[in-house]
Length: 203
Image (cartoon, rainbow, N blue to C red; front, side, top):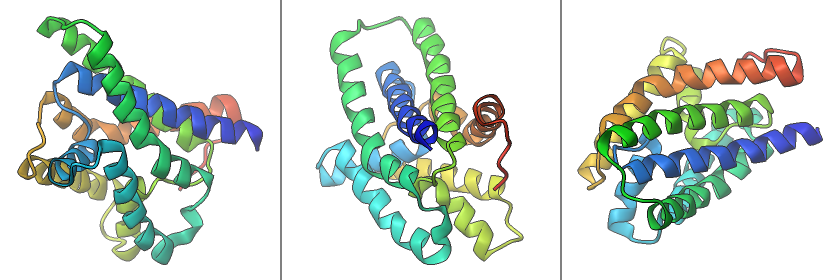
């Protein structure tokens, strides 16, 4: 159990650092952060607070439809990852130099891999899903004909569109995340399950 808790906490810290790097690269960010950045443009309460409050609202349908996916990892992600993103991005912007466009692209791709790795680590601990990550899963439960992968892609593209309407900046990284985040997470999740837990947990 202790190892799973460690993986959940470590994975969410890595996610926050990876997304913070994408903010620093200024080439777009992941769909959920894009959406909550748009909300923060209006609410102006801080990105970390927006992510925490948004996930708290999403926790309600998660609890009502499938509370079995609620565990420690749900609350760690819901209440913690937004603040890691906020402070990591502020640190990178304040302390790292302004880079050329080719170097920013290289760092962007590294950051995307870091985010997928962090998601895989925290999900391999099998201690619950984040409210945002559970949305496509809940849709699949209510509408079995809609595959999880399809629902997740629609969710991410919708988040980008809504974030853009609310004033968030889109970039090439945003669209890479929208189409590749789901498959990337699955690859790393199964990898860490095999290596550290000697199993593949199917959901």
